[in-house]
Amino acid sequence: MDENTAIKNLKIVKRVLDKYKVPFALIYGTALGAYRNKGFIPHDNDIDIGITEHIDFKTKKDIGWILYGLGFKPAEIGFNVFGRFEQAEPGYNGDEKTGIIVCEKEGMELSIFFFYEDDCKTHGKEMTCIPKLGAVKLMSIPSKFFKKLDTIKFYGDTYSIPGPIEEYLEFTYKDWKDPLGRDRGQTYFEMHPEHLEEIKDVINKNETCILKKYEKT
Image 1: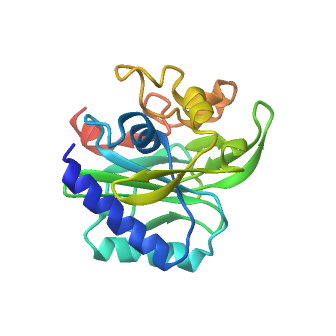
Image 2: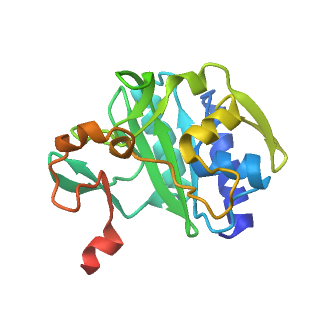
């Protein structure tokens, strides 16, 4: 990871979201790095942001296109849509309820998850992200971690993070204090293996596919 590039990209995204008065939180590896490492995780290459409040569709599209105009181009990622992989589009992918902006700039990826609240037999309520219309569920986080957010100072700015943060990190990573442990958040179907039969795609039953790798196989 180029730390300076990551800092610059995060500050750009913060300015855009603040302009639209969209509250957001650092999640997954970005939250882990901010709390444990006091910075970005050196071997990580993406920034993860979660939005749980309802944002109107036009605002989501506007945010996506502004970021695109600032040089954030679509990441080479495809999503499982009715059993086929569809490549991520420029800007916002999704509908009125949920979606994602997944892009990259100067070698750093950015994922902005627009969650909606869903019922879950295991976790009660959880925040879930479906990346494109017709796609399978991609990620989910128990809603309780967004009821009262923690805050953290990160590269000179104050950000929200799930709370209580250590409980969230324990849930997400188990061995979060170990820098050699897993630092990738689990996908929806990794968290809910009982629903795995719902996936009917063509590549290893994944929710997403890195197109660069797929094209080489």
